[in-house]
Length: 250
Image 1 (cartoon, helix red, strand yellow):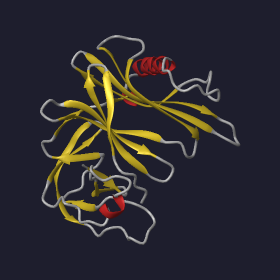
Image 2 (cartoon, helix red, strand yellow):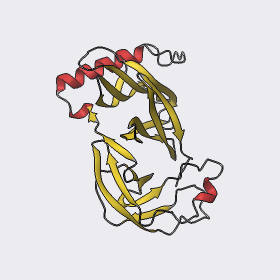
Image 3 (cartoon, helix red, strand yellow):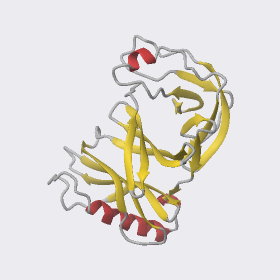
């Protein structure tokens, strides 16, 4: 898997799935093994383009006290892509953002997500008890006869001296055309100081393998670095986190 690096659409970080937090130091110095491979590039709107990886780039200065993935360059830049896979390995799933919906639809989805979040059996934390939920981001796609939603729902404590935030990453399903709350297939919770609490960005959704098993690719962001993650649909109404990358912070 590859991701755009440093804000440049033609510079890529090559993600090696077998690398762990304890082995990433040795991995970052290798030459990225991607020259000549064709990659399909994906964003939240689906497949963006296909392109070929050119020669690897010089690696990060090893004297820096940080960890990074090997770098390479694409033969041609493309805008708005998030993640790339070797061509033919995955199929695109187009995500519809709550921000692009009609106002009535986006309002109904926000209410449904707030109702869904309120039903979760998260750890009791009096700091956030009774506070309203707010949808930070939400994306939806249709799968057979169900609608799937992926959302980051937050609650905040706006104390000037100690602002705090709670993030709920929710993947839910409900029958296509139905209204009301979603049946939750996966969720995770992170809470703490606003400036350092882990947040999650939805990069894309794809169908894996011959079965086109739906999966969501996530960027898990910490205070100074982050990881990538994969959450797969393993059965109707059931999703599971199946992989997390090593931590990088360069």
